[in-house]
View 1 (cartoon, rainbow, N blue to C red):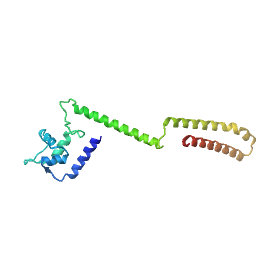
View 2 (view 1 turned 90 degrees about the vertical axis):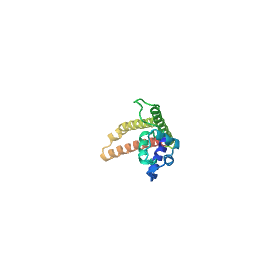
View 3 (view 1 turned 180 degrees about the vertical axis):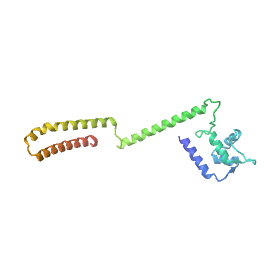
Length: 185
């Protein structure tokens, strides 16, 4: 991944610096950030475009190199008789390594979040939520048993409403205290 990013940055830098359209092979090697021997290899493989005076046509050579070289290794990525090459398998290996590093980075980020208290484990949280919901259901279902005798003796509708509201608020407050204790204490 790092190699790929360096190659992308170098490519971007080259395009920003690309004031000269034509260069000598030595200038082109410095421009590409490769050795002169590598530029000579590019020349032997026909990957460079030259003018009649021997200078390198930068734009045309860049285009040819970018379409022919593996950006992660600087190597040839043209197919060989339709068979996967060693470079193809190394490319797959590089992709797997990048994926492995990405997953490792995600895992480390999650661990940092957990240690900072911004993440909680699912199972204990789910269990606490279930317990809270069960307590709420039991408390709500118990209201008629607690209020039945009081409501039966009451003839004033406003008083019945007040008794029921008070009981429901009491249950709600108890549940809020339990929830606060489960999730924050």
